[in-house]
Image (cartoon, rainbow, N blue to C red):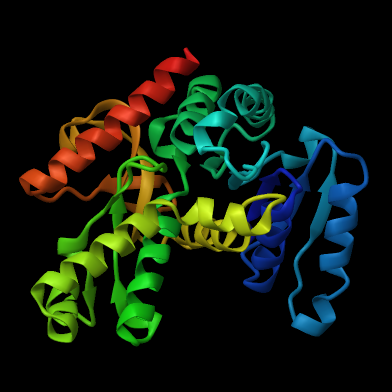
Length: 316
């Protein structure tokens, strides 16, 4: 059986970690594209030379030509400027729109049958633009945000309760911005509702305050990393999160992962890319998982969707 092919567009911090993770997991042969001469070639040579140590055997190629992404099964797009301290994701829209336009045209020309996972910010707008330019079916153009946002939320809960991060199940919905919707009611530790455990530890009133602080921290988690790094944004965590999605697609795992998907009536949203739980398999988004939101959750979702709409409409 022919090996799968994964192309990574953007040779920055996320692109390098993506390439290493693809190799470590032997997901397939990997192409790293960047416009800077020597950068992708150098990173891929570096990763290839440690194959004997880490015991992986895949073809790794760095390139400055879109031709090399030909026949890719999955393309992951990280190209664009990262945030600097004090910037919101939305501040990147003008410059990253131009970059995404040329990237999408390259993918459309050379990898017309691929499934695209976008990581570039502002996420919801960049996925929308990528789909519009490629003209690919909505199921084959998706965005990574919810996997990471949910992982951040789960991490904060695990640290607060002193339990393993492996046993926390958490989910965020909505746009990838300051109005994202961490779903407290559906968050649990080994199946036990998280609020029950927080109330045991702190009492009802304090438990509510502690959860509100974690929700707030989740919404600002990307900015927290940016402020500490001072010269860029998170790269390990977005890369790992995108790989979870890519692996589900490449291996047809049918995992249910929070994904930036195009909605056609689900959750009351029509015609916009928004983060929701989706089944990811070898066709991309195979179905969207719908469930009931209570009035408070729906209000938060509506606010988040309104922010996405504003962003997308500003791009037009």
